[in-house]
Length: 97
Image 1 (cartoon, rainbow, N blue to C red):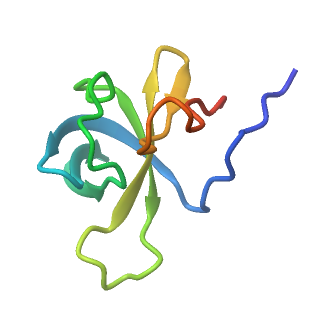
Image 2 (cartoon, rainbow, N blue to C red):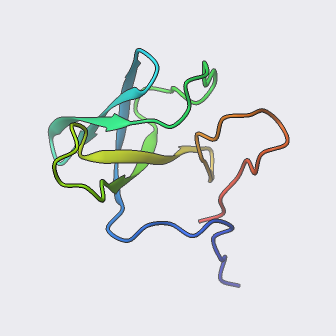
């Protein structure tokens, strides 16, 4: 049975590896052997979502002039992708991929 994403994802997404979170809106990921800075929409602690080496899904910025070329869409934990949505437990918390 094929799993359908619960959230539509932007076209052109890439998968890298989470390296670290810096300040509130910046995440560093390893993509094709290079460190790339990614924008995160969640300014909260994201405790448990910042595991070094975890696969990270990022979408390309719609504006090519934007300072950070990608936006974090999700990070994999076990076999599920978790989007960095702010707001607490009432938010959608899992993307089945």
